[in-house]
Amino acid sequence: MMKWKNHPLFTGTIILTVTGLASRVIGFLYRIFLSHTIGAAGLGIYQLVFPILALCLALCTGGIQTAISKFTAEYDGLTPLGCGICICMALSAGCAFVLYRHAPWLAAHIVCETACEPLLRIISLSLPFACLHACFNGYYYGKNKTAIPALSQLFEQVVRVFSVYLFYLIQTEKAAAMTPALAMWGTVCGEIAAALFCLTTFRFQRIRLSLPVTKRLICFAAPLTGSRVTLNLFTSAEAILIPSALTAFGCDRSNALSVFGTLTGMAMPVIMLPTVLTGSLSVLLLPAISEAAVKGDRKQISQTIRRTVELCVILGLGCTLAFLLFGHFVGSLLFGSELAGSYIVSLGFMCPFLFLTGTLSSILHGLDLTLYTFLLNLLGCGIRLFAIYVLVPHFGLYVYLWSMLVSQIIQAAAYLWILVRVGKSGKKIRSPG
Image 1 (cartoon, rainbow, N blue to C red):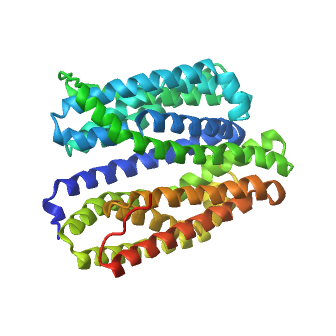
Image 2: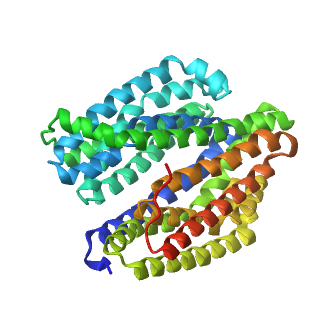
Image 3: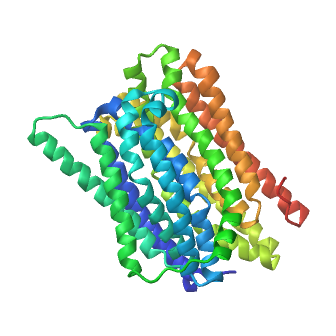
């Protein structure tokens, strides 16, 4: 069994947990601030842009960051980093150009909200810096130096919040309203700050390039990028279609954006706050399961799975109970929104299954069964998309909330079933395909 206290990953995970929790809390408080300054409708417009940004980042860095981490130990670490930066910068420049040049068309036909046009142009400026930040994070993860990526994430969050608060003070001085565009400029400032932070800690060492390494990076990253882009296409469609489905249900566009902003910008951050704990557990699980699998230690794998399930169920049920008891109070106190409190209560039932899917998927990754997680994530997205496209226009948003619960239950049950099959077979199941 791995002696975690003597393992560098243990210290790295503690650092990631502490800084991740701090970053999550800052981000949570930031959403509260935005809900009071730009309103629910403004928050909805602000949130609509991020699926497009996530899709671009998946295309530009989805597989490259992982490839840099993998090959840093195999080669001179600076060579994969240099090659990865070149690839990501080229991809990010192309994506930034498309976003900026075609923002009117994307806002009208993809996001279906013309008010997002200036936000798309603003966020396009952050892409090269976000990609540079991701490349350096991959390098430091490969070196088992998690402190720098963790601190850069925290620094990015602090700069984002500080810059938006500064914009707010300037607008207040001018007796002008805070806008979603100014909040988006805060995201750009944060990404620039994080990239510069990483460059400073890197001490401007000489970065090397190699055509063979570049080819290996591309070959390794291409399928991973393809799967992440595919998954992001589904999740982006899921977020973008919600306001349109609400409009079809009978809401006017402003009310639909307000409901969307309340769900994604208020209720979901509350529900996702405890996942920082299970996220850190997932970081520990992957290498532990991988080590046990290499040794053929089925007993250790079974014990780890059982303890993980027990911990996630206990933690999840505790969070569910807390959200049921205090969800309405939290929504009213923090956001001044009874609707946010209602969504928090409804989403609270999802916690045990949400925690299970996150940790069990990490176990599957450790057993080299990553394709199963990809397919099950697509299945979950498919269930939610069906609810949005078919059911929400007739029954309203609560059908979507229940579809989220159903998708998480199905995924958690499928993960458990696969792991039970692994235990009974006594050997690793081959990924499909």
